[in-house]
Amino acid sequence: MLRFDGQTVVITGAGGGLGKTYALFFASRGANVVVNDLGASTNGEGNSSKAADVVVEQIKAAGGKAVANYDSVENGDRIIKTALDAFGAVHILINNAGILRDVSFKNMKDADWDLIMLVHLKGAYRTTKAAWPVFRKQKFGRIINTASAAGLYGSFGQANYSTAKLGLVGFTETLAKEGEKYNIYANVIAPMAASRMTETIMTEDILRALQPDKVVPLVAYLTHAETQETNGIYEVGAGFVAKLRWERSSGAIFKTDDSFTPASILNRWTEIEDFTNAQYPSGPNDFLGLLESAKDMPSNPQ
Ligand code: NAD
Image (cartoon, rainbow, N blue to C red; front, side):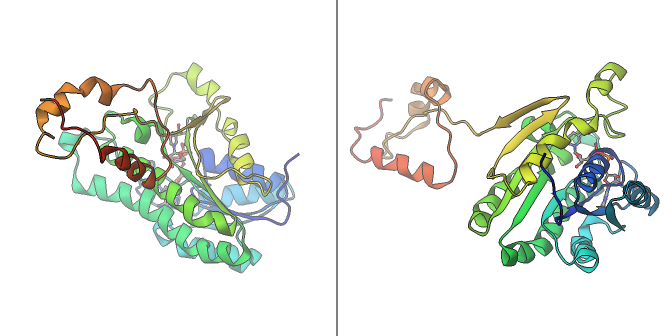
């Protein structure tokens, strides 16, 4: 059994939905849990301490250790401070808080865009920024960021949300690269779960299969001290767990003289789109290596 005794876990948006199931699980496996929740509505309005309090009470009633924090994630440093004040440490950070401002792009207002960026991107940035020096100093940290299939693939009416969610993938990939030598591992999940976020857009049958606790095992595995996984992107829900990676066609390399014209692109379009011998790049330098082979090429056919 993977346990988390002595570990302090900060979970944002843990007053309901996925965050609550994470909080109950980690506490049941011996962790100290910071239950952060602003108590906002799904579209980010209002605030209440009740959501976090209820979860903390439930954990304590079961003999676990937890404290509440009611700050918005945009003040993520205060959430980390709560962990340090209460437990003297933070080992695991789960950036989970989230809201929706779904509207067609045509009707999207600046406020819909800005609030989504603030909660998802700035929020994850602020908590991570505050936890990072602690992680570096103790040479241990585990981070889970929460993306979405909407970010990976696009989703009607969610231009703001999908932008922020894919931003969290890039954020995670860079944290993973910068953190690895300090034993700070970062992974990102695109969950699928029944919650107030999804209950209005899915049928009852589907919602029954998508219980939020079915996301917990992957999150727990990825944050455990034994885990060596970092820089991963996972889709998870209803008992399905899969890893994603970037795929690039083997592409076409062009001589970059005057023959590099739009017509030369047209001539080799099939090659550009051909994924038969796909590559799986893992960083910007993979691209630069390809350029070596272009040096002695003849001009491009027109
Ligand atoms: P949820 O609405 O049940 O939970 C989100 C929690 O975040 C709420 O308790 C809310 O009060 C809290 N919150 C909102 N704004 C906050 C802020 N500024 N500061 C602190 N807390 C705040 O939704 P959920 O389905 O459990 O979603 C959890 C995460 O998973 C979100 O990031 C969401 O975008 C993501 N997600 C969920 C699904 C799904 O199928 N449920 C799919 C893809 C991504």
